[in-house]
Length: 337
Image 1 (tube, rainbow, N blue to C red):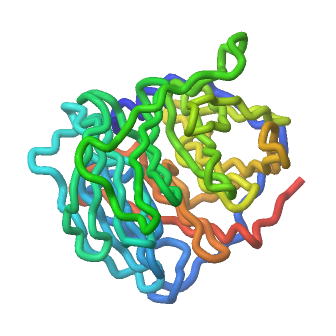
Image 2 (image 1 turned 45 degrees about the vertical axis):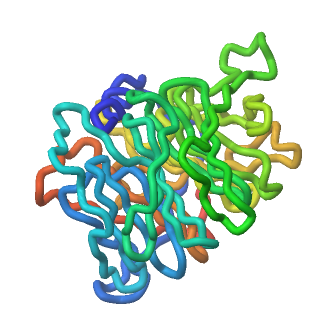
C-alpha cells in the first residue's frame, strides 16, 4: 500500500490553488519542553495511521505492522506492537493503516490494509485482543471511525463500507460479526456519486452520519451507514490532488493532502472545510501549510492543536530514517489574504 499510494500520488496532475493559503502560526518550542511542535516517532517505520487516545497518549502505526505509542507531552515513546516478521516493502507488503481508540474500553482498532482484516489491541499494553476478517485478502481496509454502536471501516479498493457492531459499553462482538455495506449514490446521473477509493472517515455530531473522503477524485461524501446511500458534498471551491486522512472539529473538517512527489514545487496541504447546516454543501475556508510537514497522512486533535504524522513518501525508508509528528496550533492559525 505504501508503494501503491506513492504511485497514485505521482500520477496526479500538477495543480495550483486559486485561493488564499495560510501558514500555520507555530513557533518551535525548545527540545524537552511540553507539547513541542515536533514529536519524534519510530525511526525506520513508514507511518500511515495515527490517533490520540486517553490522556496524552498517541499512536503512530506503520505499514510494516508496528505501532508506536508516544506521550505528546514528554515525547517519550515505546514500541507497543512490533513489526510483522518478514516485512518486505519491495513486495508491496502492508499490514496497518488507519486507527482509533475507543475510550470506553481503551481498545485500539486498526485497519489491516491489504490483508482485508481489522485488529483490536489493548491500547495500554499492546496485547492483541482479536482480529476480524472483513473482506478477502487484497481488499485494502483503509481507515475507520468509532461510533457509539459500531466501528466503520473504509475500503480503498471498491465502493464498500464494513460495519463491526459494538455493545452500548463498547464491548466487541465475536468472530464473523462484521457486515459489508455496499455504497450507492443517491443520484444515478452523477458519475462521482460514490467513493471508489475511500480513505479518511469521520462521524458527524448526530453519531449516525458519516463523512468519507475519496482519494483519487478528491471528493468528500455524506454517507448513511444504515443504507449505504452516499451523497457528494458540493464545495464552493473543489479540492484537488490526493486526499488522505480527515479530522473533524464540529462542522469544520481538516482534510490532509500530501504533496505530489513528482512536483518538486508542490507542498503538503491541509484543507480547512466548513460544512453548511444541511451537510450537503461546504465552504473551503483556506489551506494550512507548514515547512515541518512531509507527507501528511493522518491526524487527530488534542486541545487547541492538530497533530499529524508525516509518511515522507519521497524518502525511502531505511532503518535510521526519521519520522515525526507535527503539532499545528489550529485555534490560532491566521488566514492570510
